[in-house]
Amino acid sequence: MTSFLKQGLKGKDIVDIVSDVRSFEKQHLSESAEVLDVESPVIVRDSSYDLKTTVENVKQAVTTNNFFYGRVQTLEHGLTEPARENPKQVIVYFCNISLLNQALAVDPRVGMFLPCRITILERGDGKMQVMSVNPKVLSRLFNNAELNRLCGQISESYTRIMEEATL
Amino acid sequence: MNTLMKWMAAIGLLLAATAPAAADLLMARVDTLFPEAMAQLQSAISSRGYTVTRLQEVNENLEWRDFKSDMYRVVYFGKYEEVKRATASHPTLIPFLPLNITIFAEGDQTMLVASHPQALRRYFPDATLKPLFERWEKDVVAIMDDVREGK
Image 1 (cartoon, rainbow over the protein chains, first blue to last red):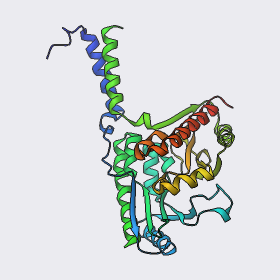
Image 2 (image 1 turned 45 degrees about the vertical axis):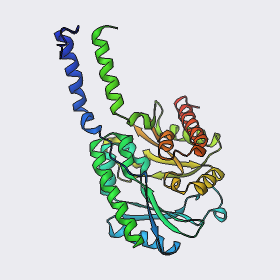
Image 3 (image 1 turned 60 degrees about the vertical axis):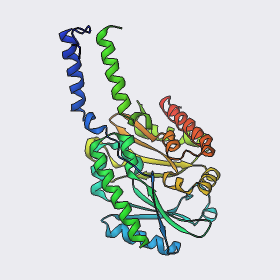
Image 4 (image 1 turned 90 degrees about the vertical axis):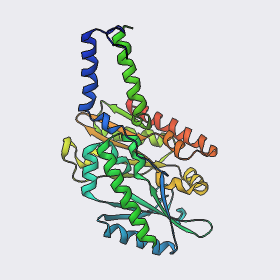
């Protein structure tokens, strides 16, 4: 490899560049550049239960996985009058204060994906599905190793909750 | 451009290429206090025909970094017919809806953050959704511009 001095840089230039690159390390950018592998942006599981039972199962599984249940509402809640809301698209909201505080402390922008939520959907053919955003997709957005760890952890929790609810 | 600047630019480009985060987030920092920016945000959303469905508090205990619970909200919004149509044909879109913008105070300034709708295009490459995602992108950018310009 040809010396950078021979390529036109002065000694001080090289020191400046090295200093600049090292400053990125202080910002944890080098470690944060990893993007988690995501098979699908959405985690989906089929449920053999009816809608009402599946919703109750999700609420129960949320609690047993150390989250607190927040509320249940339809996707269209607030978009139209209650009578027109589609009752077959239901969202269960939940949270874990410890995880929330950790995530927000790492990056306050992550709030746009909180609180946690799982959707229960009765499809046109009568089949029931539960689904959620795969938290691992957030690794691409926030580019932070610590958040990657939390996203992986939350992704496992979502999967566990959905599998328990549909077992 | 001198040699040093060329090298710095090359390193910058390399880092940009390996750091996809900025491209997938829409952000704006405004020199406006939170209550005023919040009002402007809701007005900008409504003026584009969207309905604000919820102002979500994320945590009542945001005491760190000068955050207060009343200075952090996730604003959800959407259009009924649009959401109905899109989720009927593509149910796996539901976890990403309604659209939302996070708004929080940082000192005397306010930050707005939203997931870039172009990320949805990557997750849902179906060509029939492209015009919808492009309009969402245009609208979210315009909404942020309105708040930035204090409209």
